[in-house]
Image 1 (cartoon, rainbow, N blue to C red):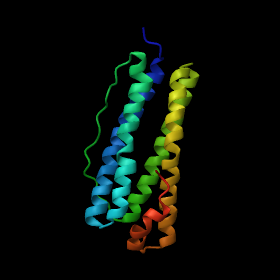
Image 2: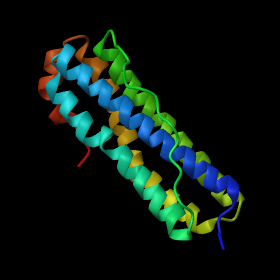
Image 3: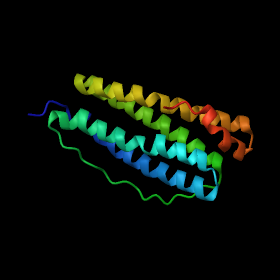
Image 4: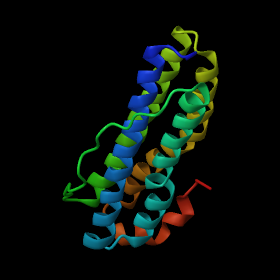
Length: 167
């Protein structure tokens, strides 16, 4: 017997798919950032704290919100990672956009679980959201600092650890 509503299951599947899509997108961003822009400190931190975070989030959702209730995970297709970026600023803005978008997706999934009385899933998704919120704060700070550095990108890259708040 499955004790999760179909809308909640679908919301979880969508979060899992988007997690892997964002992993691939951020992997591409950090590759371009490190190779074409020589912003290696920034690329290293974004890879470790953002690209690696999304598969873990997907695994947590799959295990804690689906498999724990006897629902197998379905993995949707993700796009190829071949995007090109013209500026460093474009990539940092995309990190912020992705972070806010995923935060909003999590919030919507939480509401779906609540509306369908999937309270155990609701609780687990709240925990995942709470863990994710500092990533949004960091992404906003990265973009804010980029404006303060006003185009002096290599100073930004050299100093990034001074305004990195994630552990």
